[in-house]
Figure 1: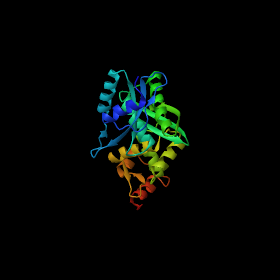
Figure 2: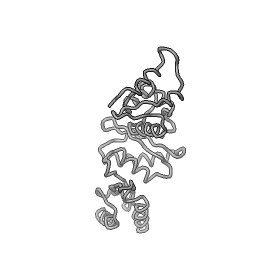
Figure 3: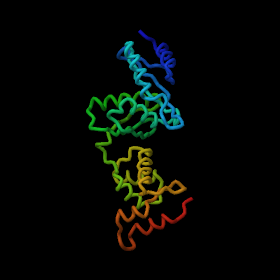
Figure 4: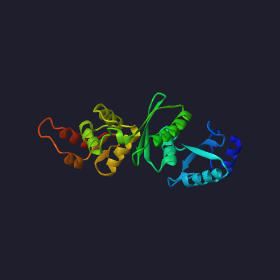
Length: 242
């Protein structure tokens, strides 16, 4: 039976940067959870790569040792980035992305599935998320597939931004939540805004505030009269904000 320290030595010799003690699974003596610190090279590629991790995992499996890697992001030192790296490494076949929101020590996780998840699959994802979050001092309160949530569409985000612009991503998130929508995390909102910016529908000002473009105003339509939100939005577009 291999010991935790022996396993760590094997992994380090194979070029796997172990970032903590190997944790033996309570159900079997030959199964371990191992924390690995991943980095990004100058071209943004993960090191060690998922293919290398998988190859080492298969080599150990052939020796009768089952290893479950838990990835932590050394560059960002961020719980959400570490969670995303771990879940996509382990469940890349069924997940596209994940997002994390925190309330004190409670963690709320949203996963973006590639298809409808069955209960057993969601349970496995929950178990992996719980392991990583506990290492970060957080407790998993809930995990939810985004397919069943009332997420704001791109059009709804643009319509709300037209009303509150110029606004930060946090302000936009707060207004969408007040309107009854689910915004998984600030990272989700920032990614959504970045996608809209690349599509030419949103402008990010030097101050960090966002506003819609003139093209978007036309696409969303207008309301005539003094109550129209478009006049103030047009003023916001030309008003300097840093």
